[in-house]
Length: 160
Image 1 (cartoon, rainbow, N blue to C red):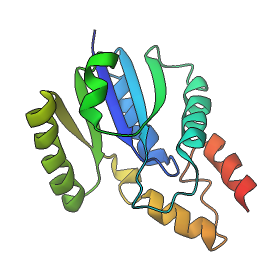
Image 2 (cartoon, helix red, strand yellow):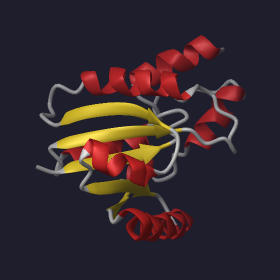
Image 3 (cartoon, helix red, strand yellow):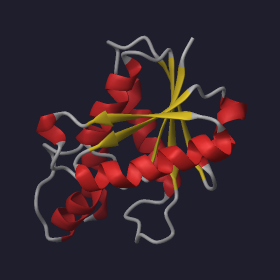
């Protein structure tokens, strides 16, 4: 049984995030989605709301047998490994700069926590999507319904 950890700030969750998590479910028996706080970013949604949005989204997936746990986390990812039985961390990467940053984090997590990280290239149709761009489009009054899951679209409508 493989348990994978998919961490991120997910503010807001996008279809790119969903793509990586669904693809992870293709090889993992259990996926723990960890919504991590990032104090250096101005958040659109508090971590607890992002957890709710993910829970709403994954309950709509009737075609996947994988078990999903969605949690909020503040601190080191390696602190989740033992209590949640994590076998591998899975991170989506869009481009070279993502790869460089995630590669360094993967090496650090292996060094301090003994856990391997799988860097999963984002599907081409979502490779341009970033939460920061979605936030900017929403702030400027644009539509992002094709970039985010329905639960997130509904929540974004509530922020206007």
